[in-house]
Image (cartoon, rainbow, N blue to C red; front, side, top):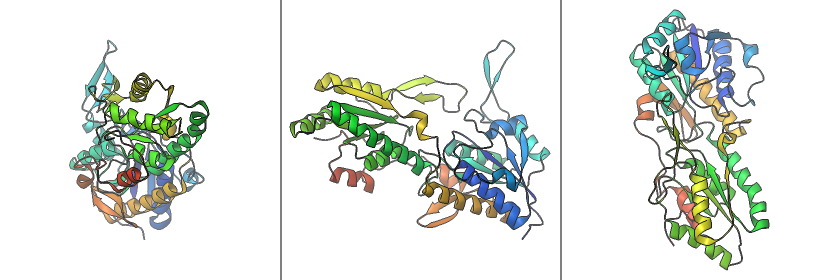
Length: 368
């Protein structure tokens, strides 16, 4: 089934790491080698490697045994946007440059017939821009945040939700033993999917997400009411992008090397302090951070990543470019990359998970 047109296909993983990346690399490589006798090359460290010219051939042996391994054997970077590429001038200052021409020069030098890019909204945006310069791109949706449009879910999300729910399970015992409020800060940036699904799976008493505005009075009312009914502890799961009353997002720092320079972080500590001041209940905060990105992928993510990778390889061989693979119901099928990046997929107030959480007594801090 070898294509007369497509003989050399590249793969890169862009943005932050997450469980399932290696499963996609494995699926793409094995499919291209076994079904099409195609040469497969891995670009190292995402778009950074594409700009700097780092690539290596992948064999069947290179991808054997990596299905359950977290991270990516190719390396990745969230600071390698070719249109926003950080370099240092002779004085040591960071200068942002447009290196897209250099990235495309390497694409042509490597004589790639197609490039499969694995990443989130940033990676898909860059991929579409490269397609506009003549690169043959097929995208695979990866992000623990689950904020890409045009697909029901992205791989990596289920694994991260599993980490959050296990963390909440563990914190339940110490919270109840010491009669404390435990605040758990999770990732997600501007979308609340991680906090919503992780909080629901872990049985959090309060879930705070960017899409639903909360107030201190109803939030603290939940804690008082639980205590009044003999439940002398509470679990609060808060998304890093949740907007605090009168303050908004809590920004940790700005990094000019990133396309989106804003780095969120610290909302958990802020919420914990406010709760402690208003309720006089001892409150502790746990920031899960990169624990949500690491470790072995769940069986769900292994299967989804494999299905995504196989279809991505087939699309590349069929010449269906500027497309992204997507899950719709039980089917994996192609969509236009533009449909995936047209806007960010956010939690809607009438989402079924939100309604289910409310029905079992979970508060979103928006009503008493």
